[in-house]
Length: 314
Ligand code: HEC
Ligand code: HEC
Ligand code: HEC
Ligand code: HEC
Ligand code: HEC
Ligand code: HEC
Ligand code: HEC
Ligand code: HEC
Ligand code: HEC
Ligand code: HEC
Image (cartoon, rainbow, N blue to C red; front, side, top):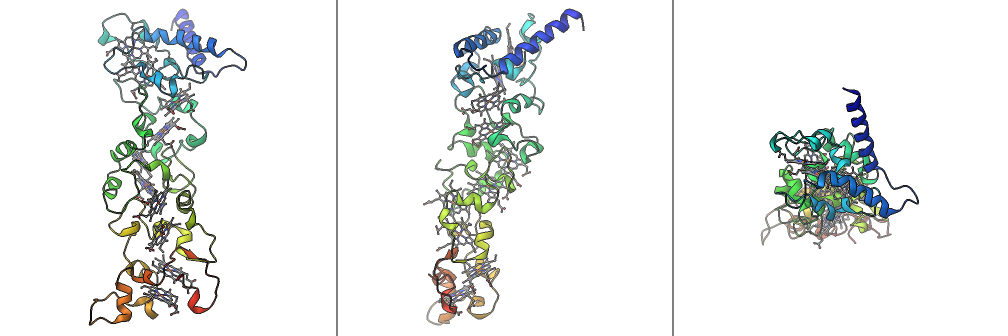
């Protein structure tokens, strides 16, 4: 590299980091915004609203807040792209930009620009997360040059996830499901797709803690707990969808009999109902099965401690 080229590269680098730098305390926000604008004009003299895919819509997103000193310029994400800027030959021969080239698939190296600014809070477990390791990139889910990023709108978010997670798409067509399709809830109410310290990219450290964020009445404390309900809701529920009511994985008595031994009435098999039925057995089959009597499956506050009163029947 020639001496003057080195100087030019260093200058470009300095310029690009300047764009990424937060405002100095006390520095006039207006001045800061003006500097950023001057830097962006290097690109915006050629790229503007007239493009097939409008570029300046980014100014309507959080990446366009002029008064915020942390706001990225074109160069913070795309790099200084000296060669691209200076080339004056035919458009199609214009060298690619340094990062996020639309003509090349985004690479994990590109993502360093995003991670440089977004490495705390909900994004602090990105490195080594399931998505990162599987090669899913920030820009696989997020669109930058728009003020309507699909993945951050509850109503359109599932579309983005379903593109890869077909099994969940199928489960959400079942009769019992969370109100995802209605836009009242999103995958991200239970999952943090950026990575977590808990299992299965769950938003909280465990399944129960995640479910308690909305179903706090299931946390208790209860005087008498039902052990599995304290441990993991997915023992009995499929969080995404089920053909059984209440997102259950199986219908009582079968659900309960997976654990409760065939001793006493617990083990009575489901039977035909009607005039010839054994009434004791039919009670396990009819209507809500075991739940006909054991109404508080998640735990009870009934204080009595005699045989008949500790069985979550009230
Ligand atoms: C927050 C990071 C970020 C900033 C800031 C940013 N871009 Fe982009 N840009 C991207 C990404 C990522 C892509 C790839 C396509 C996509 O995800 O939208 C892209 C795509 C493009 C494209 C190609 C569009 C196409 O689909 O053909 C152009 C041109 C472009 N950016 C120009 C600019 C200009 C000019 C600015 C400054 C006004 C700018 N970008 C600011 C991240 C950014
Ligand atoms: C002199 C005009 C000009 C300037 C200045 C310019 N570009 Fe471009 N840029 C173009 C043209 C023309 C294309 C279309 C090239 C093509 O499609 O082959 C393009 C394409 C792009 C693309 C999409 C193609 C690719 O390389 O991935 C991006 C992204 C981009 N420019 C970003 C920038 C950024 C960021 C800056 C400022 C640092 C900038 N451009 C400055 C003219 C310019
Ligand atoms: C120079 C620093 C910087 C860079 C580089 C940067 N961002 Fe941002 N980003 C910000 C700031 C500042 C905000 C607004 C405050 C916040 O939400 O933290 C923001 C907001 C966002 C938001 C929320 C937008 C909204 O409307 O609420 C998303 C999503 C995002 N960035 C994704 C990305 C992605 C993906 C990249 C890489 C393509 C990227 N950012 C690159 C600084 C940056
Ligand atoms: C698998 C899809 C997916 C990937 C990959 C992804 N995100 Fe997100 N991102 C989301 C969803 C969904 C939301 C909205 C829910 C939320 O805030 O957690 C979001 C929200 C955000 C926000 C805004 C948070 C706020 O407070 O409004 C930022 C910033 C962000 N993502 C940055 C990034 C960065 C940087 C990367 C890459 C390191 C990335 N995302 C990768 C799906 C994704
Ligand atoms: C580009 C494809 C893609 C997109 C889009 C995507 N994912 Fe993923 N996701 C993956 C891959 C690949 C894995 C790695 C594990 C696997 O193979 O299932 C994964 C893993 C997961 C896991 C953990 C699975 C486990 O076995 O522990 C969850 C939860 C998840 N994604 C949720 C989401 C959510 C929510 C969204 C939308 C905001 C989303 N994903 C968008 C590809 C994607
Ligand atoms: C009500 C909370 C909740 C919602 C909403 C939710 N999930 Fe899950 N998801 C879970 C739990 C809990 C698990 C762990 C399941 C297990 O361990 O059996 C899980 C597991 C997964 C897995 C790993 C595969 C598996 O079944 O174990 C993927 C992939 C996934 N979810 C994707 C999604 C997508 C995509 C959405 C949105 C369309 C979504 N989830 C919405 C709670 C939820
Ligand atoms: C963001 C809030 C939220 C979280 C987190 C959440 N739920 Fe829900 N849950 C709801 C809403 C809303 C409904 C629907 C209530 C209605 O339709 O009246 C619901 C309904 C249910 C139902 C009854 C479904 C039916 O068919 O009537 C079950 C069972 C359930 N949730 C279990 C869980 C489990 C297990 C978890 C943790 C994996 C969980 N929920 C996490 C909000 C949440
Ligand atoms: C031992 C199996 C089992 C476990 C474990 C379990 N549930 Fe349930 N759940 C049920 C049954 C059975 C029903 C139906 C109850 C009924 O019809 O009275 C139900 C119903 C529900 C309902 C809808 C009706 C209502 O009571 O609000 C929600 C919400 C719910 N469970 C949340 C949870 C959460 C959250 C967890 C984990 C903390 C959990 N469940 C763990 C068996 C279980
Ligand atoms: C994953 C296994 C599992 C499933 C499924 C399950 N249980 Fe349990 N259940 C237990 C365990 C473990 C205990 C605690 C046993 C003990 O303390 O001796 C318990 C305790 C009970 C008790 C109190 C017994 C006592 O002597 O105090 C009742 C009643 C009960 N379960 C009913 C049900 C019903 C009804 C269902 C179906 C909706 C069900 N269980 C599903 C594991 C399960
Ligand atoms: C007709 C009402 C009724 C139905 C239906 C019913 N139970 Fe019970 N269950 C009771 C009563 C009453 C007790 C307490 C007296 C006793 O110990 O027999 C009890 C006690 C229990 C106990 C405590 C240990 C024991 O055997 O005494 C368990 C566990 C249990 N039931 C599980 C189940 C399961 C599983 C089902 C469904 C297959 C079921 N029950 C259906 C009324 C019922």
